Length: 180
Image 1 (cartoon, one colour):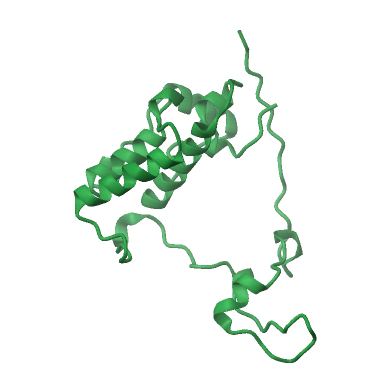
Image 2 (cartoon, rainbow, N blue to C red):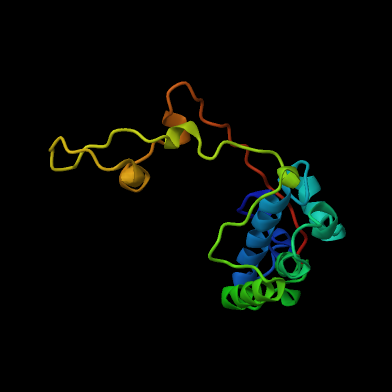
C-alpha cells in the first residue's frame, strides 16, 4: 500500500522500494520547488504524477526563477533527484549545502529574502481559521494572552469543524506496482 500525497511521494516510494530519510528530502525538495515557483513540478491525477515523476525531469528551476542564485537552485534540484543515491545522504548534508550555497551567493540568512511579484500566485498569509482571536487563560482568569501568542496557545479547529466550511472529500488512491 502506498501512503502519501502523490505530488510529494518520492520515485522509490511510488515503486514500493525500501525507504529511508532521502524520501523525506525528496518531499522537502518538492515543497521548496513549490515555494519558489508557485506550482508543483508535476501535475495531473495521481497516476499521471507517478508516471511523470518516473519518466520526466521536473521543469528546470533556472528557467522559472532566473533571479535565484544557481547554487540555491542546485541544492533544491539535487533534493529532487529521481534516484535516491543521487540526493543528499541526510538532512544535515542538505543543510550544509544550503549554508555553502548562501555563502557562495553572498546571501545574508539573517535578513528576509524579498520575493519578486512573478514568483507565483499570491495567497493569503494565513487562512481565516488562524486569525487572532481572544484567548483566555486555562485557570479561568479573564486575562487575555497577547495576540502574538494566540496561535501558539490556541487549539485550532480542524477543517471539518470550521463554521460554513465542508470537510474536503478524501479519495483513496491505490496504485499497483509490480515488484520484481
